[in-house]
Image (cartoon, rainbow, N blue to C red; front, side, top):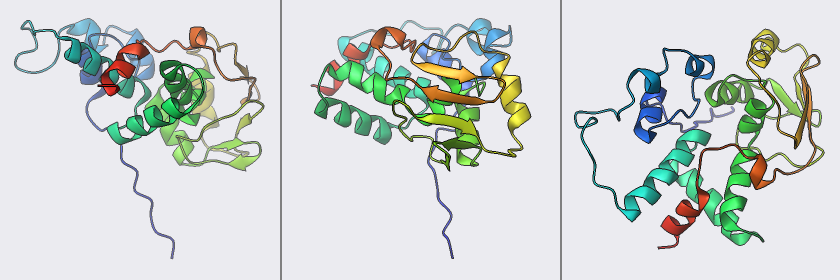
Length: 212
């Protein structure tokens, strides 16, 4: 008998996550572009003391940057630390390696391609087996895509209409990816350069935090 797989995830309110970081992390898709956005309505942090002035410190600034990156890519603390450890073992600049690993997660790539309105929606589509990579069904959101990988919606997927609706919100696809929004297929042309990663993160602050 096959055991059910339990997947840990952050279930805290997404608008509060954005308000805590003081900027839009675009966690709720189309809602983030309307006047219903939590950051637009209440620009101060959540909680009883949200309107007060908090003392800043170097450590606090670094910690907030790490938390912002985690929330932006929707990964938990243990996962994030694992990505950092992998990034330090790679050649090149650690901070850029870290962002590149996060950017190449399948759930993030589906969003970048315009096939999902948010990372939460993307993760759900991946987990339910609606996507294939090189012809094989992949249901792991953290799957790392590689150059020349071909991503496509599974034949006969019931989520095709949901995906097509998401493409209407897409302003553009990064140069390291190629998308066919009519056929709902895409290709990874190469790994992204730092200048092509639009995450609102100062990765050096994260490196400094973990280096202490």
